[in-house]
Length: 264
Image (cartoon, rainbow, N blue to C red; front, side, top):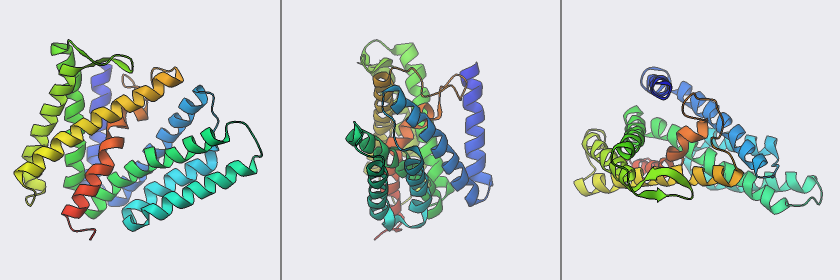
């Protein structure tokens, strides 16, 4: 019951923000989520025995979320500057052990957290609210179908070492349900997208979401923790809730902005 209530509240907050509140509120929400996810990310790194330069890494990550929606062409510059700032910061610390691992994990926060959440905000700004809601709905349906499909039909483990509870049957249910939902509603949001495109993108988003879930599970397992935090009752942390979007978001953004003619 706790899991269901928490999910219901989260859906109300996110959908209400996207549908009814001014655009800047979506950006603010994206920054808040990025900040919370970054704190959990730092905690996972610390659990693995690695301390990263938190302030420059956080600034680079949050700046990426802010810049991408407004200046999509600046992505490469943002990544380059972020890497440079983090490198200089680490060099200023002196010749400490593990400098490469610290630098790699710090820069990866920009790619893993900043880029996807910036992409989600960019979808609403550059394409529209309906486009963002379509992605969110697709991922939520996939998660629910995986969970309940796995409980009802699950027999074979999908990735027993990384995520023992995930099953092949649950993943299949998630991909099927999400693809059907995306295929149906994408015809309304993107009437210019053909049947093959809707099928391919729907399957791709669901599959990427599963990949993002497994990736985060791998990080947690290597860090020796079960959840990224206990912030959300019944669900764990923010990273545990957005892990699928972190993989699916940038791909969706790339496809729909070209589809909408935002980029040449």
